Image 1 (tube, helix red, strand yellow):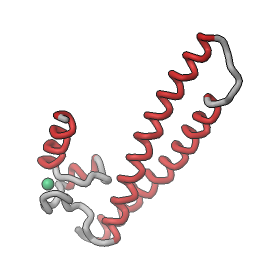
Image 2 (cartoon, rainbow, N blue to C red):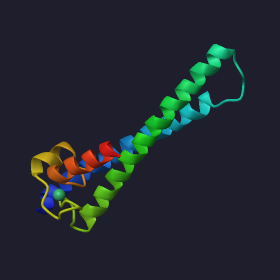
Image 3 (tube, rainbow, N blue to C red):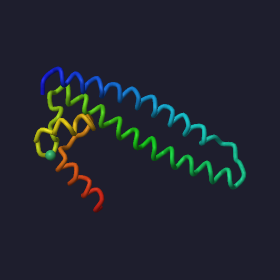
Image 4 (tube, rainbow, N blue to C red):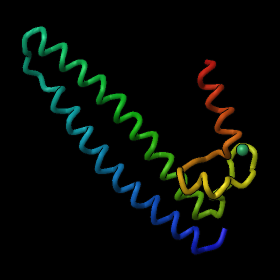
Length: 119
Ligand SMILES: [Zn+2]
């Protein structure tokens, strides 16, 4: 991959990274707010634990995404970017344009997803 293309992806990934950090901070802040100790009535408590549940899975997803973006930036620095970490094939540029933080080529992604779904 040529330098100019790498720079384009690096810019996109860095932008994604700062957006995710801001998002995660807001989610965690919201999590602290619903976690306050004042007890409401039963309905309010149920609503709060529902909110907590949502926020937890939300921040979980955001954290996973953040890790993937960070790893992609590391791979850019070590010239491994754009190469599938499973089979070592080059990932198609069209796919990288859509999801620059992807670790797998399309075939491996499908395999990974199938395994995750089967367990
Ligand atoms: Zn692959």
